[in-house]
Amino acid sequence: MRLHAPQRASSGILAAPAPAPSGRGPTAAPRPDDAVARGLILRGVVVRRGEVLAINGVSLDLAPGEVVCFFGPNGSGKSTLLAAVAGILPLAGGRIERRPADARLALVPQAPPIPERMPLTVRAAVAMGCWGDAGFLRPLNRAHKRRVSEVMGLLGIADLADRQLSEVSGGQRQRVLVAQALVSQPDILLMDEPTAAADARSTRIIHDAAARAAREGALVLLVSHDEQARRIADRCLTLEAGRVV
Ligand SMILES: Nc1ncnc2c1ncn2[C@@H]1O[C@H](COP(=O)(O)OP(=O)(O)OP(=O)(O)O)[C@@H](O)[C@H]1O
Image 1 (cartoon, helix red, strand yellow):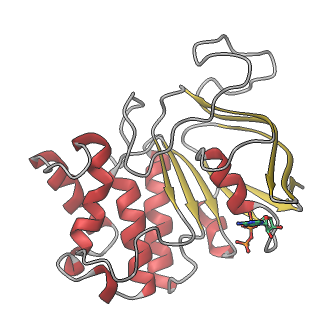
Image 2: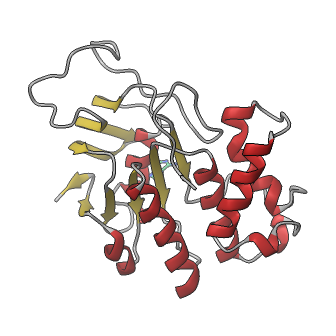
């Protein structure tokens, strides 16, 4: 089973539109300072959160197949950087480009986006990751259902499939959210502290799934306070006060 599909035009349920490239369209020729033909390019990225300069001039070249871990103290800008890459937060300066521009992106957010009391089984929550392919609230085809089952197996949550999401533990819930993102077969997988509530076993399962997605060609950006993340990292970057140090 591939967790990741070749880059294509449609977007997953958790996908956000690519941030508008500043000054040129998605088909423009690479600039001399662009080191990667595919993946993500950040140049002089600046993001404000109210009065705070949360990201202050970050430039990175990130290639498919990499697991890039972001460490750093609370408030250093890790979540803000992922949100900017996902197109959720606007840039106050610089540019972020997906290569190609229609690369599919999925975000595992730090705060679960699904309301705690919403009646939803684990299987239905994971299946939401297929909506980018199937259409919003549309029935899933056999291939989608197979993918949902396979990813639930991979994340060790198959036995929870019919449980209400509100009735599983915090660590199990994190695996559900990771499964939902993986089901969308992202080219770029953004994970914001996906193991914050996870025990050692859950942490290993989540990290192994992220590493597998990268092996299959996805670019994985993983924000973490967990030193275990170094095990799967191709690169570790530290943010301090909005800068990569
Ligand atoms: N919703 C918000 N409104 C205003 N400022 C915010 C908001 N969220 C974060 N900030 C500020 O932006 C800066 C970066 O915060 P961010 O959440 O990106 O840090 P982080 O490195 O992810 O922290 P943590 O490790 O605690 O998750 C901090 O100074 C923070 O106080």
